[in-house]
Image (cartoon, rainbow, N blue to C red):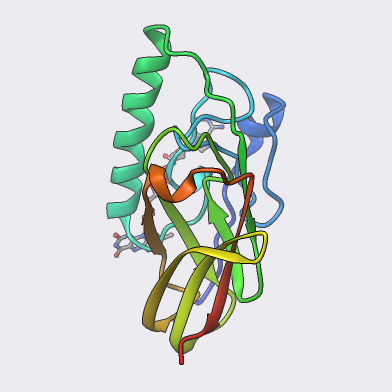
Length: 165
Ligand SMILES: Cc1cc2nc3c(=O)[nH]c(=O)nc-3n(C[C@H](O)[C@H](O)[C@H](O)COP(=O)(O)OP(=O)(O)OC[C@H]3O[C@@H](n4cnc5c(N)ncnc54)[C@H](O)[C@@H]3O)c2cc1C
């Protein structure tokens, strides 16, 4: 028997805690420190978005653990000054809120398989960063590192998939 089924994050606890939920991922809306809309509550792994490989889960767990420890030692919750939105071809992007104070790792999935494409981070229609991809697939997580300097002056970033030619 071959099962090809999707997974939905189990978020009973998240909803009960009144945490803001992303309707596409079905998981919490987070900032770059994996912190949810409720200060002191952090999210990572499949409760946040469904992972195809456990490696990413471990990386997120490591980051959330470090940031939660810093929070418990008094590091204040950061203000998410920059909103991250999805544009054509992109299904979702995490984190959804950035401070612009740190380098970040964006995780995303595309809507459909494609070849020779460009992932562009746009601010007011201007590209602040573009990354070429020979091929993309909804089943494979994409991660893009964005430097603090690339976020300078940004208020809202839209992540889009564009023709790579
Ligand atoms: C069928 C299948 C095959 C996979 N194969 C692979 C593979 O070959 N290689 C690979 O790298 N990855 C694979 N994955 C992905 C990998 O298993 C997941 O990405 C990983 O397990 C997610 O880890 P997690 O800790 O975030 O969530 P989970 O492993 O799901 O752990 C969540 C835990 O929270 C508990 N829980 C849930 N709700 C509550 C609650 N309210 N209170 C208390 N506890 C609660 C659950 O019982 C569970 O133990 C596979 C996933 C599936 C479903």
